[in-house]
Image 1: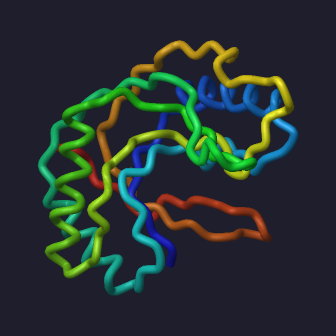
Image 2: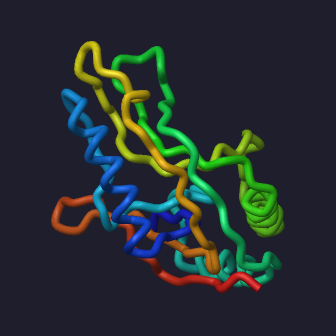
Length: 177
């Protein structure tokens, strides 16, 4: 199974994020935009994982000690700025506790012998991939009010296709403590 660890959102937050996503879609020629039900903030992508390793990952994640916390969104941005097709995201403000959560997840999973790249963690909410903006359109014209989001659990997510549609399924969750 393709596995990742994420923070999920309550419906009222998803509704607001999806409104922003639809504004991006309006000024885009094309793109692969995130389905409403797939909106999340990735803590760590793990890729293909066996069922046995999944159980071990779940056990290690249950050892994480972080109290529930809140974090805030910031701006709309894009990765791959110099390419014609971009990843468009809703940014997340620097947050000590979110960074600490990421660090603990990495440490715990390295204890299992998993190879986790040592790249900088840039928390964000992906709105679309392979996005081409309409000529003379600019993401900066979209006004985004910061959202405060509560995190009280981490979710173990499977990325799969259901009837040809990319679907993220919460396989389990661990309450923050």
